[in-house]
Structures are given as structure tokens and as C-alpha cells.
Image (cartoon, rainbow, N blue to C red; front, side, top):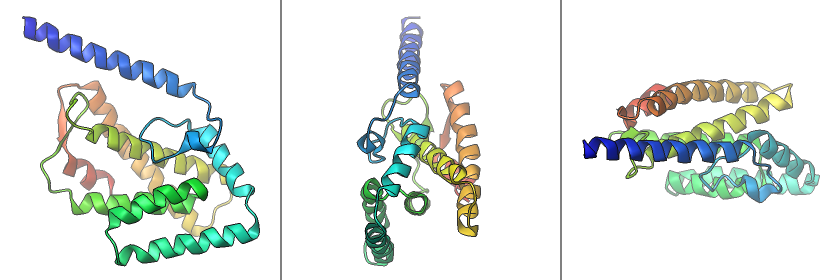
Length: 202
């Protein structure tokens, strides 16, 4: 009986913590670009951060944009010479200086390739496993796709490449949302990391 009560108490505490955290995050106002640094795995206010990304890009001169475009191309071209996860890390830091949809999309796609290459481990994804951060990582990926989707939708008229990026983003959002919501509503349930990768990263 004591064990059951202890488990219930632990679950309740975790639920209250996440509920409180989400309430704070939903009311958060990003004051500067550093509040929207995607190197930090936390909840970022999507609309506010998108506005800040837009202001950051609009503040750049033509010469600065060309410099960042060239640098972005060099980072991507370098993916054949270094580990993919390192390219993803480089793009995450680069996004702070040049927060465009193509940079974020490329970063996320490379992270998917890394995940697919390591999908055969036996890691379980569970909402209530304090020893694992897999649920948190997938939830953060979901949020980044939501940011990307909002960035593209806000732009309005899209090029063919951007339409493809938006379509992929929406598919990822729907898939990850469904699985993570199911896990958060069923504390004792777990799924293989491979299951999420195979189902969502098509």
C-alpha cells in the first residue's frame, strides 16, 4: 500500500510541476533573441520568438545576409567531412545569428538522420521516467517544428521549397503530438524510440 501511495505521490508531483512549468511558459514573453535560443531545451513562446527572429533578419544588411548565406552553405557542405551531429550543433549556434526557416529546417532534418542512424538501440520513451530525457527531447523537437511551421505560415506566399518544408513540418507536428499526448495521458505506457522515429520521420 505504501509503495502505491508513494508512486501516486510521485506522479502527482511530476504532473503539478509540468502543469506549472507549462503555465509559466505559455505566459512567457521573449524580450530578446537570447530568450529564443534553441540551444536550450525548454519551452519557447512560439509567436514571440518568431517575431524576434523576423526582426533579427530584417535588421541585417544585404551584405550581412550574403555573408550568412555563404557561411550556411559552407556548414552544410562540411557535413561530408565531420559527424552529422556536429553539423547539427553548428547549425543550432548559427541559428542564433541567422534565424531563418531554411537553417532551422536543415538542422532538424540532420537531427532526424542522426536519430535514424541510432534508432536500433533499446531505449524506451516514457512520460514518467526520471532516468530518461527521451520524452523531453522529442517534445523539444516537436516545439521546433511548431516554430518552423509558424515562421513559414506567417510569411504567406511560399516558394516550392518552402511549401515542402511546411508540409513536412505539419506531418511531424501531427505525428509527434499524437504520440507524446498519448504517453502523457498514460503514465505507465512506454514505446520504443525506434517506433517514434519510424512512424514520424518518414
